[in-house]
Length: 190
Image (cartoon, rainbow, N blue to C red):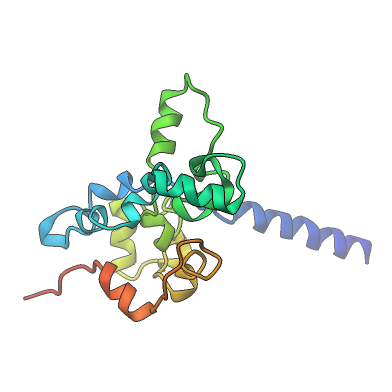
């Protein structure tokens, strides 16, 4: 019996080690493929939304006032209570961080690219689906989008932040809000 249990433990550890860890890569990695007019220019559409400017709002006087009213002891751009909804991947090892060394310019650029409610906030961490080869395999039906961490946004994704716990909450109607930010590929006209 001990051998069976030990065998199952070893097999479980092997399977767990083989499970891909999806990591955040930032919206600029999406831009190359998703900013072409003939493909729908999704990146440009996103850039024009409040989501793209979510981190910047934390730097405003209004946000500082809200943070003070909330009793926060740090600036909004440093407060986990605010960052969880204003950046990509807060709390995940590959997500936005506050502790980037000043002299690590590469890490700073990568982190700056996570300072927004970006593509991965809705579609999941992009490390495994960021390449054209993977996207072509999904389109061809060779792999599923879920197998590489790509997902379609749901109301549950939105209400993580768009809820009554937010100090700036406004009534949230999924259908209305989703249609306002929707950025699909154009329909094939052939």
